Image (spheres, rainbow, N blue to C red):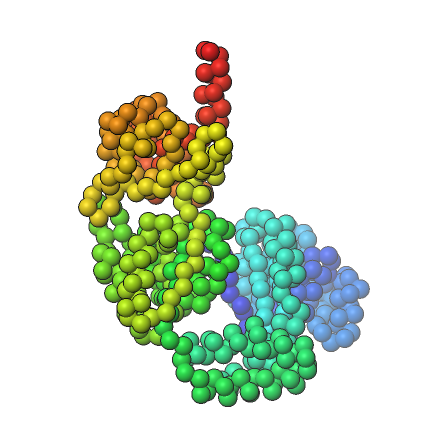
Length: 464
């Protein structure tokens, strides 16, 4: 991040702009939404600028900028659309202590003006650091359509009531009050009775929350999916937005953790097979301890918490402690990984069932019905199978599996650094070692990527 987004207080402060053409007009249309004292320096200003000056919305100086004109200014815009003149005025403004923006000159500007969605006092600023203005405009248009026009009115009425709400304790109860107002009671009151009804609703709601008991602690067991934030369910997003504490495993990506509330406490409860780990008992105690303080806890697990996620043990722990819970399923690693190779978990004429296996359990490498799995046409999704690859290979071959059976390993499925290793049962351990996979990976026994499978079928036909 080369530009740190901030909101500058401009009420009554001096903002200076040099220029009178199209570039100046574009900036002034934004600046006139503020309460700044705007001064424009231009020998030949556009008619709109003259009109704004006549309406006392800005001060117009019909000359070029000179030394001293930027004294005390908070911001300065060089908008003469002439590189030499812009450099001259920017140098004057910099010497006099103003932050400088040179229109269409990102490299020499000290700040940039973002695309803005205005629901005053709710303001959304969108910046791409000059990389993609078209993208910024598209995001702005999308947000304009999503944010209701009455949002600003609700915010203005709510702002006037903020001091009254200070009687509520800081934290969850106060957040719940404002969430109730903005997302439920406020819009309903505005629709039914206008601003006066909204003000009455604020007071009535406050009386209710003064006597309301704090919410009891609660645990949401949430599936974070395979890593792509766009694959989170809406219910998962809501849980993260409400969480006081997020206890996550090592498979959850930073991009997903970014979606949690800024004030939420993030706790890394990572576990790794055959490596340093927090024990399951420690995780159980951690979940219960936070929930017993009244916190809304999200236990965030990579993939789906119902698949090899030790969910039963954690539910037993919170149930024994008398804590309520709910489960938010996620997209399984198997579903995401099989999609990445253009295949499906089952297919007519190939396999009518699929096995979900773990490569190791609490006792070490996990044993399974190898004889059944070794039969032709079987498909299995093997979780945590990298370190147990040689063990799995040996058991399958021992029970008669074809050494040429396709095996595919998908690392970091759905993420930008996704990798796909297509191999065979015979070559699996050696190819895994050579590939040096370090991220979370899922192994498909009996499935090849669609392109590799097509090539194999073509080769067999040629030799038939």
